[in-house]
Amino acid sequence: MMKRALLTAATFTCMAMPAGAASVSKTYSYFPIGGTTLEQIEAELSRRGPHVSRSNSRHPGATQMQFTTKIAYAQGKGFCEVADAKTTLTAKVILPRWSRPAKADKDVRLVWDTLAADIKRHEESHLVIAKNYARELEQALMAMGRQKNCEVAAETAKAVTEKVLTRHKEAQAEFDRIEGKNFESRLTRLLKYRLQRIQAGRIPG
Image (cartoon, rainbow, N blue to C red; front, side, top):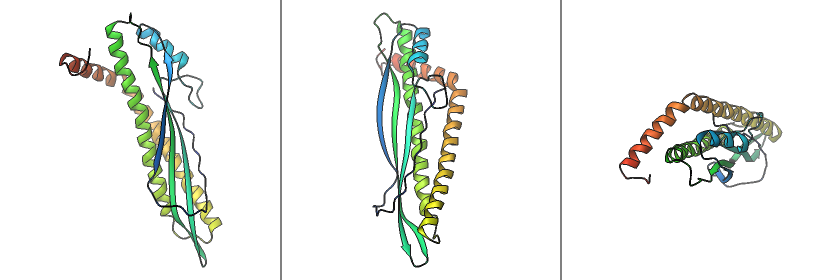
């Protein structure tokens, strides 16, 4: 199962800020693997793949994510409310890069291309989930309503943030569970589709 490291952080500020939807800052990094057979490639992934937090094993890919939320408060007579909330998702996607030795069989190259594309799709799907929850977090903070004072508002915002990020973590775990369960059937389907495209001359063989 493709896993991902999940790092969450929330910062709170009373600085005035412009309104805006959740933004994403994304970077990619790659780790090299060798091997000429599928067995060797699998061993390389297990040996060189990134660690995932709370796990001693390595994985074919990973996505490290950090949520940073900045909140502007508006204080009035006897109340304080959230005037603006902006969440930034900073993500680092870690993917394998195969050296593609010339002596590797054509079938091995086909399986690798299919697998590598699926690993990338899987990790980027984690980003889609995270962005949706970043947007949900902003909306939940804006919907808090008036609080007694800004200290209470900050505590309420912290509780709201923890609740949304807990749901986010659960959603990511559920996505991994479903993906892992359907991995073999999905890979078989993708291989069949890629073969059809090769035979049709739409992608190089």
